Image 1: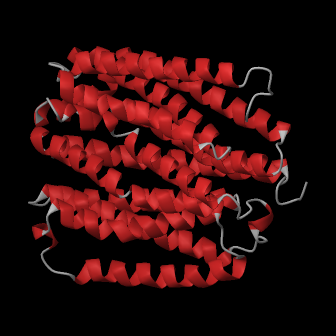
Image 2: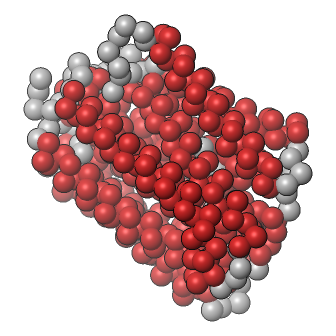
Length: 406
């Protein structure tokens, strides 16, 4: 087994811890932005803002597609350095343009989304290149710096007349700052070419797996908002968005774990497996699962108290929403983990089938049109749990007698 396929464990997990620490700090800053939006925007506008985030996340999933594709087809070190210089200067020029353009408040929400699309694609591709090289520090710092820039812009605009445009601008600036940091680490990257880790065979399966992972990353965190908007008012979605701040924290922690485990799974599969790496991956995922369940259950009591202190209004009537949204995030983490396992083995059919099961909830919501948010949340959690159980049962049948996959 090559050294590239089996990196030193100390270096590997120090990088993972750095990513987790930077991600946790960045997530905290993102929470402050959400809290700022919840406190400063009217309830209806806050609901509109979260619907915009859901729509934008789905469209910007093209960036995630490039991230997943870069994991399978990396550039050589010299090519990565050249491209990184281009990304760095393009980001600086774009930031300058945002600073000098007049009357940004007249831009429509979709104009902001389309402006952010090329930035998301560039950031996704750069993250994938660094991710496969296990350069987790660069990924973590890019997210942290982007979150800090988002908070700075949102806070500066909170005391002015038009509130919503300042939050749109904050998201755009955040993407550009992240691109600058990623490009800088790309320029300074001195690791060897990772061609020994991922061969260039089975391109069709790799493209399909990249697409499945992309759609999963975009759909899973937003599927409930997409369903709720079919039968709920903007005010109800605003209440749901405020309550789900705890669930977003659980989901964000899960994404840090899965971002680390994806390149490890690909490496292990490409190098005929590595049991020691597999042990660490499973251990990290079990810790995340325990943390998520504990946070979801305790949020029924702690969530209203925290919201009273941070947001300044009472969410005690929604105690059940806190627990349900948290448990939904934990279950979606398990589903995304399973999809990632299938795609690491280039088994895009099973991963796509499981993703299709999640997407089917949108059709059910359109058909049944649940009357209340709590009724939908209870049904959604039961539905996701059923998908996990069915997927586990089918895998045991298909893989009976074989060693468990990483």
